[in-house]
Image (cartoon, rainbow, N blue to C red; front, side):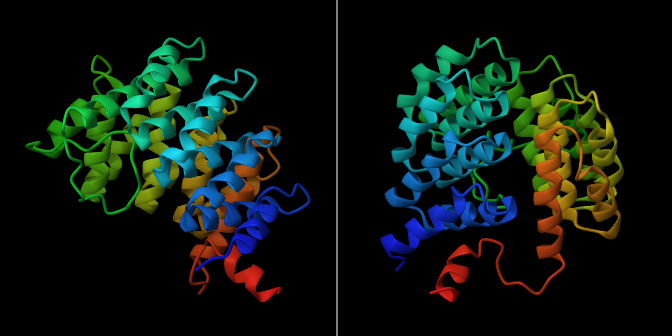
Length: 302
């Protein structure tokens, strides 16, 4: 059992601006793994901070926890137009991940938000909630144990068929996301290359999700595609951030070189993402047992 004091101590690491960002990230994922009301309270305190990257990750973790006690703070963040678009987007996605019918009115309200990434996210989240509410079950074949913005397509015939849905801009983003997660679950070289084509899509939200999925797959054949988007100074910073983190998950020497090159980027979100990604590389290439190690470190220091 983790005590309230330990949770508070980890929360102090998470919310301390004097701590390195990589430590704060590890504290966040430790709290996510612990779960419960106290962990949610500590995570929620972080939304008053000034790192868009960290705040977006707070929202992501609250969604992955799938605990309705986080609905209140996530709604506040989505409604706060002073928050960065990537933070509001992640709060909307988290509301969809929790998936309860009570979030429908707030998602309906913001699906026509002037910030296109926020509007598109609300629309996908709404489709996910309605899909769940209509009695569908998500099959448990996700090898990554993540709560995804949409379920995979159940009964497709071929990779080509999936790819045509995935790249069809006339279809809803929800349907295209479903094809994306089915391609991810295939875990073949062909599916990775098909996914990489989505990095040229016209929707920044879509491109950022593609990068996220390529990070889950960790296939070195996607490095050159992720690198292209990361290196483009005109690319949306939400996409560049996700490309950096995907490279951190793949963690080859080439990835480390690319990340070191952008670790002093003039866009704060990109710079911080490279910092976190380099920490991920270190973890992926080390004998460390777990990434979310804040509890171990707090116990060591007491």
